[in-house]
Length: 372
Image (cartoon, rainbow, N blue to C red; front, side, top):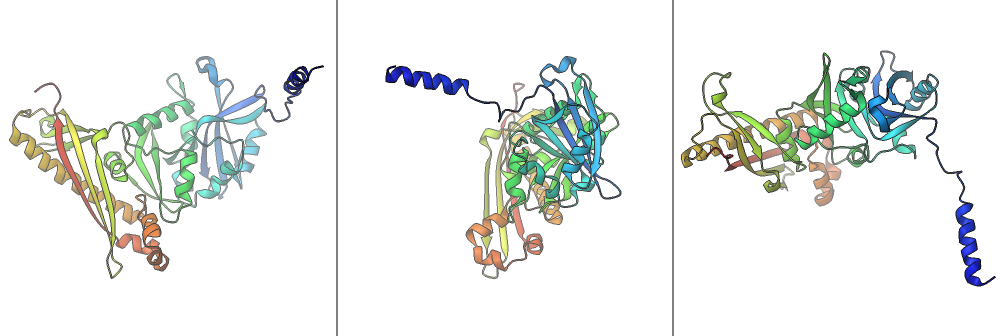
């Protein structure tokens, strides 16, 4: 046999000998599309799973919701496995919910096993906090014709695009969660009757849930954080008069591709820390029933009014962040990088609340639709 023939024969043999020892058959697997974690009155972990048999054909699929308790996440999962048939596998585009009472503790112990398990997906898995028991959302099972896990995942993604929720996955959560110089934020949901609604943004101090921003504050916070998405929309009262008169309001949308953000951290000789945060926000008017947008004076007046109002809103957002101890802008990370000796001498848990922030939002109307 020639050398070429021998090489070809060995290649074919190697292909045929490729074993299945490292393959994980999904024939009998049950897909866990969503999981929720709560803390019981006895201090145990209560895990709730939405399990789907055939995720690829959801129009005809049926989901099951099961719960189990344990002293660890793994134990609660094993107790659910004892109740169902087949082997549970976690869906790579799934999601995880945590009840706010559990999240007020150190959240990392409830995430540790997920990062250590080599088969557990992380890169596309969404994560959110729930005001109340997270498991209650999954027990709803469906919203219309959509399975509950898919519905919540789509809801979170759509609100990320509108700058109402921060964009976060299980994978991108780990670095800030373990960083002493930066905190993180997560989507915040709640159940309103049969509706699953947005509460706002959950703030974390270290690894503990410590406060929240509402949905009206959320878009400006996302812009202030420098991580804006496709759209950010605002409504402001710009005329005196009754609050129920739509003529007194303006609705405007940020031109996200043109936003400019500058954050500068300065340390004085006495170690006083000042943070200047400047936002240039070009916007397009979406609704303004008073009209007159063809008049330059009207545009100038609205620019001044909206700039003042949004600067005030930014001050209130920063006040909430400091009261919650949430350094999600990474001021501590900046000090670690540029002032390492100062950082070593600080008790950041106390010092962060004494940082002086100087926010400024400059609104500039650059479009008013097609009416004018």
